Structures are given as structure tokens and as C-alpha cells.
Length: 367
Image 1 (cartoon, rainbow, N blue to C red):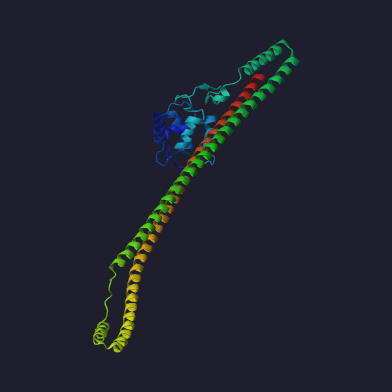
Image 2: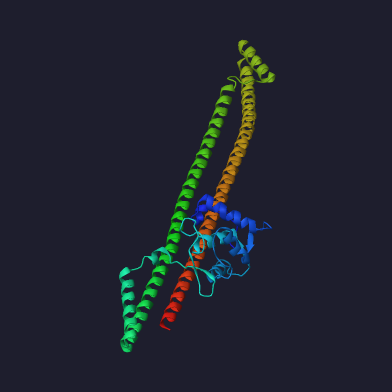
């Protein structure tokens, strides 16, 4: 049985109404709704659809064996559709109408086996020559010219074998071309698939890189604005201690009293004190600014890390989507390839069946 997938009318060259009719008949015999019917019920299902065929029809049994190679005895809807449309038993290229049947000598109803289109378009000149040669053989046989009849019969067998080989080779060549066509179409689709996804990934990576650059520019602008803001907030005159201010007052008083030596000593001590206080204030301010800037940079680092993680998640999602779509395309390719293989097996069996039938007919005529 084929794998379960959504079957479409166009997959089998059917209209929606034809597809619905076949499925309705199939569902009627699928009494347990398992999605399959017994192989023994295929003939009855086909008769329900108007196909005059017996359960022991040789072509029908050969076709069932082809679509059910493991002999499970179960025929799914896909296999039944193949029998109805690709086995020359049911609704082939004739627009859904039943195939002609002919009565056999033993009273059995047996399907006519028809050649594929390209085999039916035979070389008329070859067929005419075979007919004329066969008529010559019969004429020689009736006239008692048995040596000439033997020569004509031998030539006729050679030509028929040559024609059979030509048809077989034509069928094999076409089947090979069909398989190669599927392979080429698959490779082209695969190349286009890769090209599309490569472009998507390049666009995604470009967008991600632009996003990172914009965030870095934003962070740099924040740092520069912070530094500029605090530069403007710095006091033009630092606040000095009371001790230092008192020393400057004493210094000024001594100078006014013309006690210059004492004023000089106080000034020296006051200068040392002021230098020490200014250095301490500068250090405290630097530590404060550094701590605030560090907090800003930590926040910016978290933002960059978060953006990088989101970009990576998006990258992984793209990879998963690509893999899912790839698997879906590969499965579709496998389904098409399996369908073609099944169709070609049926076609080859039909050809062998026809050739065997012609061989028996020739032997009967010779007898």
C-alpha cells in the first residue's frame, strides 16, 4: 500500500466528479473505514463503477500484484486509483469510460490490452509489410510451396521479433526519459530552493547586523550625552572647607597688618590644604562618574546580549523552517517518483502481456 497522503484528482488525470465517483465506490467496499479494501473486492468495486471485468481476469490479477508487491491483500485508495487510471483496465485516457471487452472461447470475459500511445503509433509501412509477408506465407502453404512458406515464416518471425524489440526499446527509452525528467525537475527545484533560502538568510543576517550597529550607535550616543551632561554640572568654584577659608582670612588680616612673614607662612599652609582638598574632591567626583557610567554600560551590555540572543533564535527558526520545507519537498519528490515507478511497472507488465498474447495467437495460427 502506498503511504498516506492527500490524493488529488489531477494526480491521476481525473476530473473532480470522476474522482468522487471512484472514491464513493471505494468507500462503499471499505466497510471498516480502514482506508483499504480486500484485493478480492477490487473486481466488484470496478463493476460497481461500470467496468465489465471478472475477478479472475489475468490482467486484473497481474495489476493487483504490481500495486501490492508485498502481497498484503489490502488495496488502498491510491492503488485503486492507479488500477482504474493507469492499468488500461478502467478509466484510462478515454475520459472515464469503460474499456471494450471481448468474449474468449471458454466463455470468460477478458479485458482488451491496449498499448501505450507512443507504441500504438506504429510504423504503418512495417505493419503493411508484415501483413503482406504473412499473406505470402499462407499462399505458399496453400500452393504446396513449403520451402518458400518456411522462408517467409522465418522472415516473418524475425521481423516480428525485431518490431517487438523496437517497441520495447521505445518504451524503455521513454520511461528512462520520464525518470530523468523527474530527476532534472527535482534538481532544478532543489537549486531554486537553495538559492531562495540563501537569499533569505543573507537578508536576515544583513538585517541583524544593521540592528546591532544601530544599537551600538545608540549606546555610544548615550555615553557621550552622559559625559557632556556631567561636564556641564561640574561646579566652577569647588566648595572649600571652613578650615581653609579661615586660614585665608588670617592670611589676609596679617597682610593688612604688614606682618608679611607670618602671612607668608599661613599662605604656604593654606595652599597645601587647598591642593589637597581639590585633589580629594576631584577623586570623589571621578569615582561617582565612573560608577554611574559603569551602570549605564552594564545596561547597554544586557541590551546587546538580549538582541544577540533574539537574532540567534531567529536564525535557528529559519533553519528549522528550511529543514521542514526541504523534507516536504523531498517527500513530494519521493511520492512522484513512486507513482511513476508503479505506473511504469504496470505499463511494462501490460506490454509483456500483449507480446505474450500475440505470440500465442501466432502459434495458434501456425497450428
